[in-house]
Image (tube, rainbow, N blue to C red; front, side, top):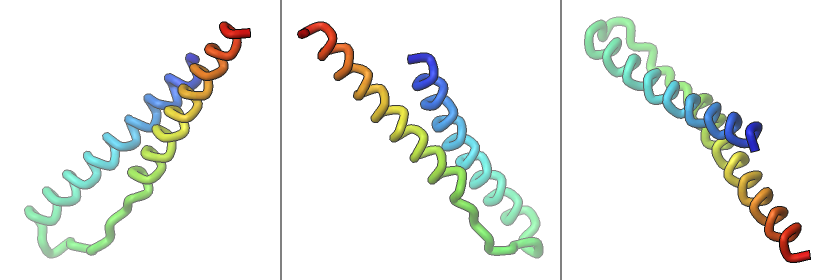
Length: 72
């Protein structure tokens, strides 16, 4: 259960990192328009969402396993 929690936390931190990257890019472009590269990286967002999804999936699987152990 601890590993699933850590996986979930890592995914959420990656989503927050992506948000800060977007904010930083918007501020940088608005202050220095001559440095606008037009590049946008969504790797952190997709990786974070995938980690959060797998953590949720594993958490649900653990709940099912605990229910199966109690009913047998």
